[in-house]
Length: 265
Image 1 (cartoon, rainbow, N blue to C red):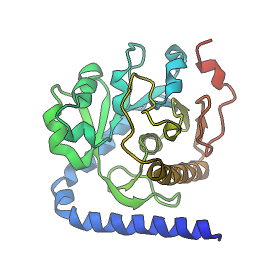
Image 2: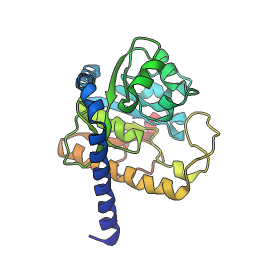
Image 3: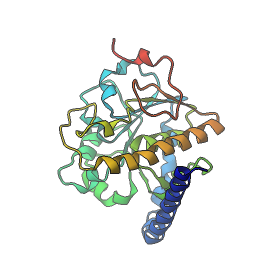
Image 4: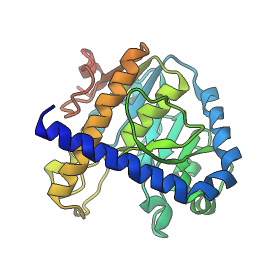
């Protein structure tokens, strides 16, 4: 094991310790919501295909012909900001803190209004805040994600404390494998936001970065490794994850050889 590997391994152990400390701190909250987290099993009823598409919010999604998507779809965070009426997601996952804590964010309200038939997976830390923002009846579950670092030898289960992940696409893959999909296709998962001092999304966003480049790259290293862990977990269980995102920097998954078929020509 090289020096980098040892340092990285140590950092993951610190994640585990932090996760353990948070679990102890939030134990009363978890006990109070134990029945809520058990109801997450209902998400499995949304699966109607063996194939699942995960739509990230990278710039490349602007060039995807959404009509060519044939399977169940998981969307994430600010997908509702995209002006489209083709995709009707089976699952919509929103984990960004700001969408719960900021009075100015309308993402939860807009997403639940636009996609009332979707199953919403929301951040379990902010259950009360989420309930205030949801203004219509929707199916929903809560991801209690503070359980330490994810490793491929751990069992995926959203009906208990989930691991800490720094990237919404990782959470979406985690959900897809829990639901039982055997083929998972990634689109719009560019994984390149660190290449610009502006936010890079498939929708208009001219806001400046608030993170320093060094800290963003530090976080990216853990996200990249989490993708490796998810790939190994999937491989052991006969699940195929394909990256069909043109120009994606995620190297954990094999590229979809037919990826160009999804793009506008």
